Image 1: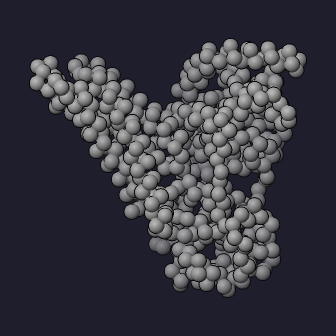
Image 2 (image 1 turned 180 degrees about the vertical axis):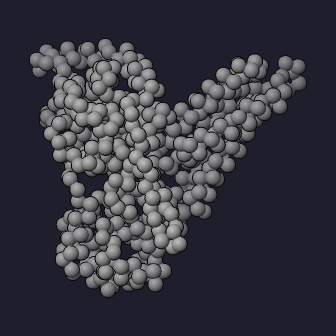
Image 3 (image 1 turned 90 degrees about the horizontal axis):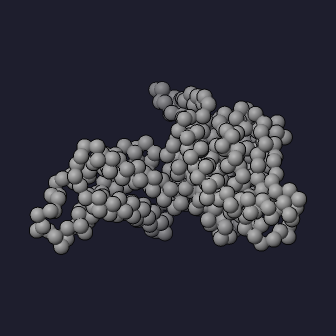
Length: 480
């Protein structure tokens, strides 16, 4: 089953479940009153059902509601389906009211609940079917050639996308430069092999695909390796360079056998959209209303204990403009903190004063996390693209587990993806995912990532290649 067919199968299952959910809701309402003269005829609900199927197909095509967009994460699935179903039900009720179509609110409410639960179940069933294929070994084993950040990211992406039916068996890199990937040495002992024996090594491990993730894939040794692998029936995939591709929508063109990667134009970011500013104002005032007493109580405690209630730290915002970002006066790097202060940090309660920054217009609820002027001063042009929008309290990087101390490289990749895809639906989804992430963090839950084993190989002895491999995508290190 191809990826396109897989997603289409989920959409068909969603549509079929819509029919079943409407029938179940109708049966629950009139199961014991089937002969009642007050019963609304079942055909009266067909327009609602038809609208549901059409709306869901259009929305799924726009925001990819199959559950695998951005990597399989249960919190993301719930955070995508809940606002989508809520929007659907709002339109159904509004449409019925505007056309004065008398209907049963009970049936529509039950339908909404059943439809949502069924959508979640469908995605769990598909996920379970993928897991069964992994257990049976019906997946393609891949080895990544490279040891830089891109190689590591490819491995993480493959791990989070089970629908690809790929499994990373290891990495290929020069043995002399193995220290650059020593963090991966969690499995069996690394294997040392000369370049001429790489294809035999791959075949002995039943490898199906080789992913090239080095900046100089045209090097003679790599070209020879590609030819040998193709003769052995091993699939070859190339990762296009450079990082700037993250803020574009590339398309592959075939010009009489010559592959061309056409980069889309960069998104034009002009100010803050009206919908985003309205969302910021409404939700910020609501959150301040329900948390204001807690913030003031905590501020009074910090004032008595530390002599100051709040901290204001310089940060770079939209287009690099400097502003003061607020937080409660709690040192994130201190040791021996009281238990309740640790809880406030883990739940990000100490960051709530930044809602005032949102009201002032310095920040947004969702966007790249702002960094200090010293870090921004060392930004490359690639990093500086994250300054094209207002910084946020939370963002795509944060819901993936990255925090202020994480590498700027990793955070920037997620931030640029957000800038490319940002929408009202995505912002609402990220806010819901943030709630889920904070809840898990407050209870001490940490995700454990299992890295694939390392297959160490001497790809070549030429100094030029060794240097290019060891420096693959070694741009500026994290400045956090």
